[in-house]
Image 1: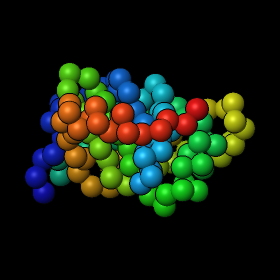
Image 2: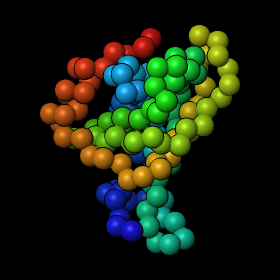
Image 3: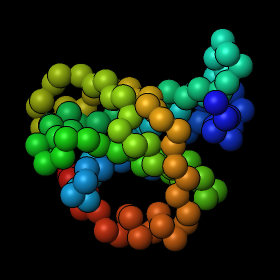
Image 4: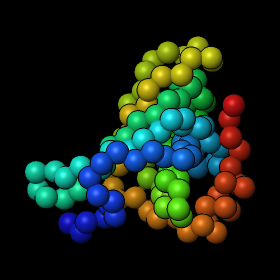
Amino acid sequence: MEQWIPFRDGEYRVERAFLVGQNDVAAPVEQAVVEVYTGHDGMRQLKGNGMVKNVLVVELLEESDELDLILDLGNDYRYRMIGPSLIAGKVFDPEVKSLLQFAPTSPWIEISPEAFNTLTARVTMLA
């Protein structure tokens, strides 16, 4: 398998992250970080977490069976994770945020600055 993570081992703060469904409705993921580490096979791997209102994730899932994760790491490093593995709490109070853990299920896709601007202009962010 080809190395697809262009960063060294370490933790990286995500400037902006959101889950998006096929209908261009999205939910913000706050305080997100990603951790890059080298696995036993010598390949870099990635996992991350952030805070999300679970009620918004449920709302997204009512409209879309699969969610993608958009990550803006700053300095034109923007990526889309197609159908990542998601683990979140089960508190559905509209005011409560819980930890969302995510990991890619396939290599992420780099998003150009122009495509990112188009995407963010197109999505409707849930509040």
